[in-house]
Length: 170
Image (cartoon, rainbow, N blue to C red; front, side, top):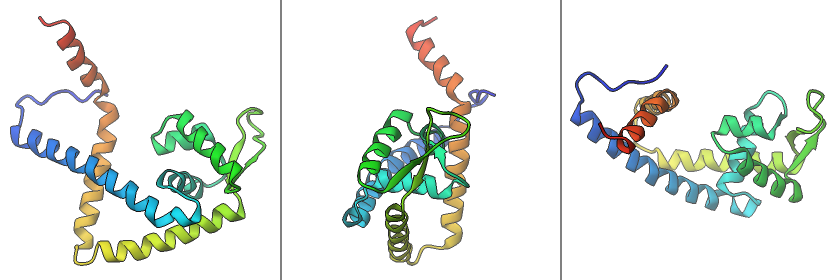
C-alpha cells in the first residue's frame, strides 16, 4: 500500500521531519564512531558488531542474504563483512540443508565472546549516556522511529511519482 500525500500538507510536520532526519544522520555517525571505539580492541567495528547482533538475535544460523535483509543492508556488504570475520575466526559456516550454495552463518566461540563483551560494555555505556533521560521518553522515541521505519517502504511509490513528475513536468 503506497503512502499518498496528505490532503493538506503540514509545513510544521515537514520541518520537524526534516530536522529529525538530519539529527538521525548525525546520530548514526556518532553511534558508529562510538561503537567502533567500544569494540575496537575486541576485533570489532560497529558494522561487525551489527553482524554479530543479527546472528545472535536469529533463532538459528541464517544465510548471508537473510541476515542482510534483517539488517536492511545490501547482501554484498554483509557478504564482505562475513568474509572478513570468517578469516578473523569470529564466524564459521555451516551446511544449509535447504540450499547447497547458501551456507548458514554462525558465531565461533571467539565471536560469541567478543559479542558478549561488547554487549556488556554497551550496557555500561548506555547507563552513562542515558543518565537523567526518562525511560518513557526513550521508549516513545524508539516507537516513533519504528513507525517511521515501517512507513518508509510503503512510501516508495510516492517517491517514484515525485521523481517522475520532476522528469516529466506537466
